[in-house]
Every structure is written in structure tokens, then in C-alpha cells.
Length: 314
Ligand SMILES: [Fe+2]
Image (cartoon, rainbow, N blue to C red; front, side):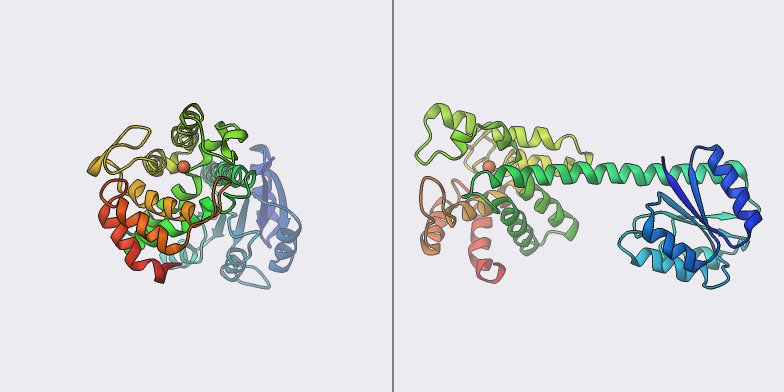
């Protein structure tokens, strides 16, 4: 059951609020002072806080600031309770991180509607966060099965972010390619371990199985709407600029730019790491391979940029 903390020094007013919210199915605690409220949030987990602006020991605004600064309350929505219907207070409250205002005397229906909305939003965000965490944990777990690929996705994410930045991408787009890097091989969950960790060359049949992983990675990420933009980068990270890659043999401009960036970084990290079937290659040799594959396997401009800025990036 969602739990609400009412921070209100007037006992009658606090009781009115509690009655309304308990009838709506919420469990409520009441704190009459700022000190009490601080203690209560440190021992209980609340879905929402209703906070009176005027408290005997501390201003509601200062308490709001405190809540937003603490890790365990920073994500809890706070609705300020105020008799003042002035714009200045509202702007100050919003700037300090409150989610909403309710003015006294309370309109029963308005109060419930606002509380329900904020709690629903918080729960949805938490669900999203959970799904997100599950995906990242899953990606890390798959890699951890093979000591040779441990940390690979994190490096691909981080280096793709840095390279995209060098290529002039906006911060929000760089964050997307970082996510794509973290999740690009998550579809390897569908590839048997004996293929993933095989010390020798894969047979044609085994390679066909291995080739299914980008599509499965994209499929898994479809469960999260916030990953919608990164799916093309994930799905096409094994395509080649000449159209001889997989899964869709996309070539040239048809290949998403993010996938072209990731392909270079992915290849770099794979070649400079030990693998079950070979030792890591010296940097100079990898530079040579990337240069000779520019224009056929990889996007020439991206390889050139990568080779130019690599030293400064990582
Ligand atoms: Fe891959």
C-alpha cells in the first residue's frame, strides 16, 4: 500500500487530510514539526509527502530543499500545502523541486486527483527504472560468463559516447549511444555458451547462431519505450558499410550513424582484448586493420576521426 507523510503542525488540518487520504486507500503518517518529519523519512519509505509551508521549527521550503538533497527522499514527490495562493511561492517551490501545490481550504476531489497522479507517475518511473536495471544487469551477467568479454559492453558504451561527442553529437544523443553500447550484445543470451566461449574458430553453423544476437538484442530492448531510439543502433552494430554485414546487409547511408560509430568502437575493443580464440593485438596492428577496412567494413570518416582522437579519449 502506498504510504503518504503529512507534514502539518495544525492537528485539525492534518486529520482532515488523513481522513480524505485513508478513504482513498492510502496509509498516512503525520509529522507536526520539521524535526519529526526528518526522523520519519529516515525510517519509513513514503510514496508522497504533503508538506505545509508554515511549520513551527523550519520553513516548508527549507525542509523541501532538505528532502530533495537526501538520496532516499530526492525522488519522492512533494506537494506543498499553502494558504498563500501567490505566484512567487509557487515559483520558489517549483524551483526547489516540489511537484505540485494544494491550497487551503482543501478541495477534496482536487487533492485526491493530484495525489493519485503524482503517486501513479512515481510508480511508473520506478517500474521503468526497474526494467532498465534488469536489462543492464542481464547484459553484465551474460558478459561475466565469459572472462574474455567482461566489461566489453561498458567500454563500448563509454567509448561510443566519447566518439559521438567528438563527432559533434548533442549530449542527449550521446547518452543514447552509450545505452546502445551497454545493451548491444544482450541478445547473446540466446546463444549457447559453448559457442560464446569456444576457443577455436566457429563452424558455419555456429556462426549462423552467433549472427542472431543483434536481432535478439533489439527484440529484448523493444520492451522499453525509452530505448526506442537506440534499437536501430543495436540491431545494426554488425552491419558493414559495403553492405556485407548482418542482419539486414544495410550499406552506406542506410546504415544508422550510431551503428557505424559503435561498429568501429566494438571492433577496436574486441581486437585490443584477449579472446578465447586469440590473444589481444597490439594497438599499432589494430590501427592498421581499422585503416585498411575503412570504406569497406567501416565508415571511412568515422575510422579517420577515431584514429585521430583515440589518444585523447581513452
Ligand atoms: Fe555484437
